Length: 117
Image (cartoon, rainbow, N blue to C red):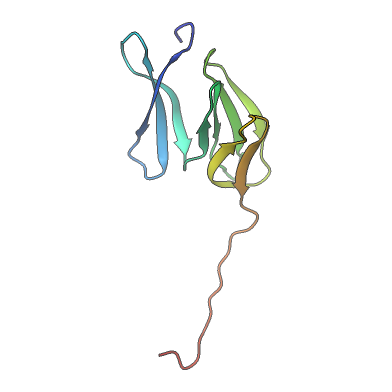
């Protein structure tokens, strides 16, 4: 990483439907550098000082919310989640709270309707 880790940010979509990668473009020109290789299903938010992003939930490992410090380039684990989160992350205006939609259960119902026209 270049020091300091200050750059213009550009989001580019990868070949998968809901997966993105984050690339850094230096202010003084130069090559683009991939910073985060996988941002899954819009589960990221950019603030003045950091980019928060969630890892995908897998059976063998729970999802984590990670913080990429924009100044240092260091990635730290903010929290480990016990349940899967759905689309999106959000940070409160005062940067004190991280908000997300948690999936508590997944299911569907099949219904039969008599005399449907």
